[in-house]
Length: 67
Image 1 (cartoon, rainbow, N blue to C red):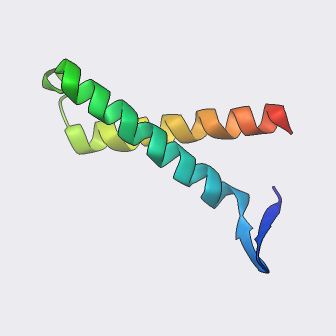
Image 2 (image 1 turned 180 degrees about the horizontal axis):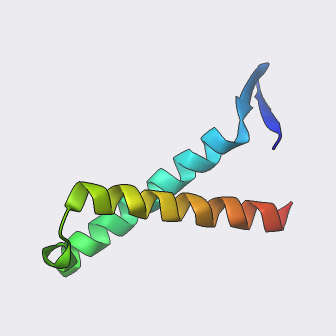
């Protein structure tokens, strides 16, 4: 895993991928809430954490395939 140079500051690539995953999960959470699917979820904060981790796994997987 490489670091990314932002104006002389080295940032781990995983941090940037995590930010992308959080943004994707925010969109998905709003969609899930708009559809009323949260009523089927037992523990909403745990579900949100798992959703973010699944998004992070997807982003890392796609980034690995693109590089």
